[in-house]
Length: 123
Image 1 (cartoon, helix red, strand yellow):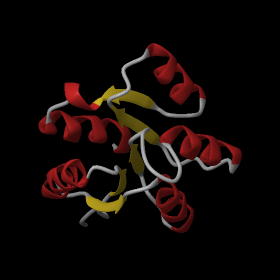
Image 2 (tube, rainbow, N blue to C red):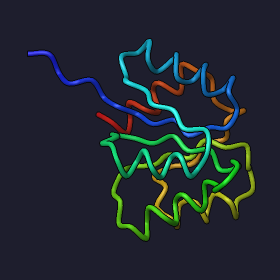
Image 3 (cartoon, rainbow, N blue to C red):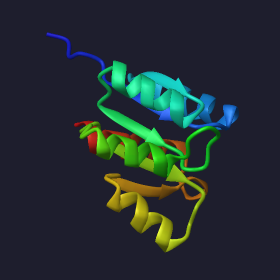
Image 4 (cartoon, rainbow, N blue to C red):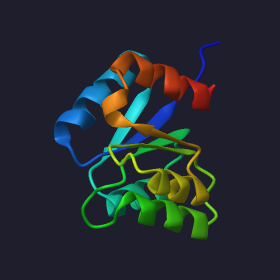
């Protein structure tokens, strides 16, 4: 019996990064939804069943910290992994305290590693 494809949400305001990350994950068999703002992400998370959310922190309308705070307040258990270029230790501590499962610096990650990281949280 074939297993059900795993659905992931990428929340990223950079269209190029969103496209490349999305295609990389789709090529690995994941179903990928995309959101370009924090507000859009909250709506999608509320109305769908994602196994994982990849969340940028610096975005228009609602930043990633606000998304994490809203999910925590709503007691939403969807796992979130932060992918950002904010490298300050305080930002990492805040994101993890708001419920992020992990925190990665985008510029340090190659695309093949993205698939490995996602597999860590969905399998």
